[in-house]
Amino acid sequence: MTDAAKPRGELTLRTLAMPGDANPAGDIFGGWVMAQMDLASGIRAAERAKGRVVTAAVKEMAFELPVKIGDTLSVYTDVERVGRTSITLIVEAWAHRSRYAKMEKVTAATFIMVALDEEGKPKQVPEE
Image (cartoon, rainbow, N blue to C red):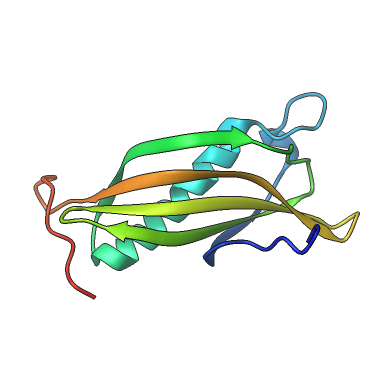
């Protein structure tokens, strides 16, 4: 890791950046990174909600560094707030650059997920 920085939250998803997810310069598309963050948010929120969740909003996402082909992308999630039907998570994406033996924060965002019942209507998030 760089400069004593460390990820916030728990490791929720790890995946490898592949050539099919990159532009001709070898930079991974931002949409692919965001999709991985959305998957991680869904996993963590569904565990907390004990059921189905959907993404309601993504706030303030800015890319600090690129992800390159061959990097391992690690996505960390931290439940910041639980409302009646919503779960707010801080989500960070970190790239492990094996060729340089370091990990760098790529981007972070706030994801708001909503718990749903079997009919697709918002439902109350159960107590822990």
